[in-house]
Image (cartoon, rainbow, N blue to C red; front, side, top):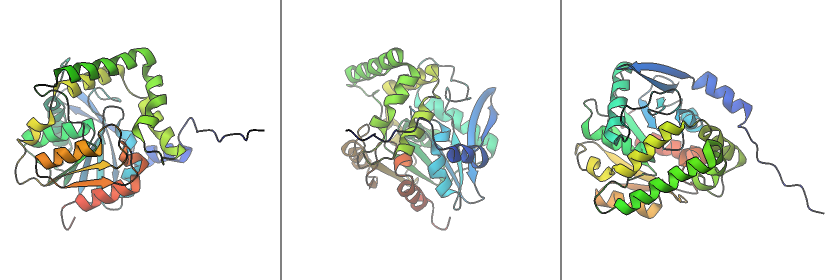
Length: 292
């Protein structure tokens, strides 16, 4: 007789959702007539601004932000078109358009980050922010970097990626994407709680916001922004050692092109800050400016 297999929880642990409401509650700012939803946690230490990727949202940072709460104030936004944030007006926005909205949010909050952390597509947004913002962060950390497909010579790849993602959205819907998300975004060692957390966050995607983000991923290129970042802005790249989406060789090659330090997060998949939250939080703390 076969033994019953343990069932993967369909929802995150109730305590995690309670912590989301109590220690990382959503707030909304008005930025030039647009809504920007964000979450803020932690104390009065240095400000760490974290940017999520294409398949996630501000809430997804909770496990990592909770580990940083004693050391920093963590601000996570819902990018335009995500959560309760207004979409961008452009049908095919660039990373610079997201960066301008972020700059507006930080101006409203009167915040200049000690550290800007971008994950996946958020790394592309962070690089665009560093290329043009007036109030620069003291340091920048790019995790599991989505580099974009907008450079010359990548037209066929951009078209294929856009078609694949948009067809999956139309065929599977948001719920279908969420169900298959953990297998793609997490490492093999990720526990059932991490899998449930990925699905919970993905089920909150807005189809139109996701389509805009796909257009940005396929129409922009991180190299153009990193080439324009101020030379005095310390920048580091890191990647999950088991990342199947933005692979370690691809992230290492990007770091080498720009002469940036590179680190691996052991046993982490693409969503490193979820399945290896403690290791990612340690990396973030180590990236803070000295003395902060």
